[in-house]
Picture 1 (spheres, rainbow, N blue to C red):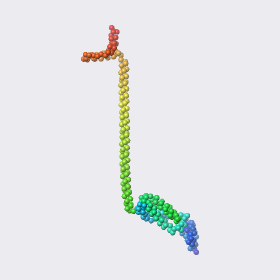
Picture 2 (cartoon, helix red, strand yellow):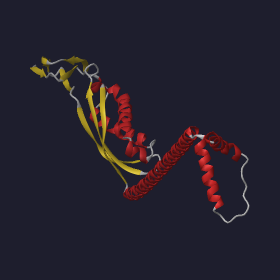
Picture 3 (cartoon, rainbow, N blue to C red):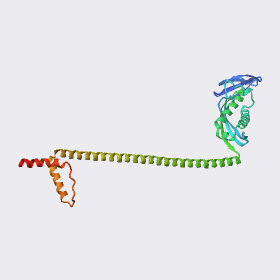
Picture 4 (cartoon, rainbow, N blue to C red):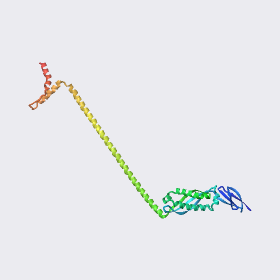
Length: 281
């Protein structure tokens, strides 16, 4: 009977079977096995990447679409024995369950969401796969959809739709620009009209104020003139007034009229002269 020394690496665990019965998992180090009584199977605890082959799926709105994706997984240390005891080939098992799970998930999502919500699909696939693979001691850490390719006729329809959408957005943008330009012009004309009206108002106010000041100055001039005349009139002597009357009578007498109207105050104006004449006699 030969002795066999087996060295287990840090990233490995070794399942030992004695006479066909599971004897436990061996940790890193060297271990002595007795053949043919004992045999071993190793499990790699490092994270692995499985490339899920491209497959055609049908979306909720009956659109065929080809999808391929990657599954990141690893065997958990605490349940490493399940990867040996519960499944023959866990790699093939994960690929199979990933394929069917993808079809189920895509079948519940419309095409537009499949194309625009990859993160949501990735997370939903990861959760569903992890729920199934837990019994095999497998932890699915991440799922990444690598490529999504709709059918040719759908791609052509999508291209036409995107082209129409671009034209629509261009028309909307142009219309919005025209509207904003019209609003800007109207606002400018409004402000111009307001400023023009305000300027005319201020001009009218200034004109009225100037006219008012001119009228006040004119009235003050007339008042001053009348005051001056009144002062001069107060200083005139009665003799001066009498001489003025005589001068006026002389001019009247030089005329061709034969009738004259004399004021009653004439006798009062002549009194100073008659008194002066009497004093000289």
